[in-house]
Length: 181
Image (tube, rainbow, N blue to C red; front, side):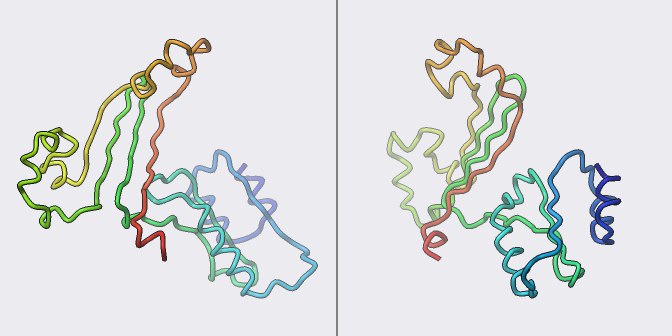
């Protein structure tokens, strides 16, 4: 793949990307001979629009680059955002043996402003609601796929659960203020 790219696209920026990355697979769009004159404004719009396709930095699943032959130093690597403005964030990691680690980060409350008597209620003594959990900022659970979907194992004729390999994902749930902006 690398040789093909180097032969088809003669660009120092792309050569640098190829030199610094594995590039075992991917997609390249080379746009030439446009009917309209693409001023820098339009290229900048495409660059900004592509940013929404890049997953958050925590996931790091793929990289996206945009280069313009007209302005070779203006664009480049599109960087995913770090999602640090959230009420909740779920991070799940699964291994090939069907074990799943789930962390739920909680940022919705300022623990110091909560009346300490709240944590004395019996229901608040459960691990996921305890004062320690709030102070740590997350609640963690280790389980297995089959326990996440009770009863599915009984009807899983095609053994689909065992076909799920290892993976990791992060899903932030933005704060209400982040949604409205």
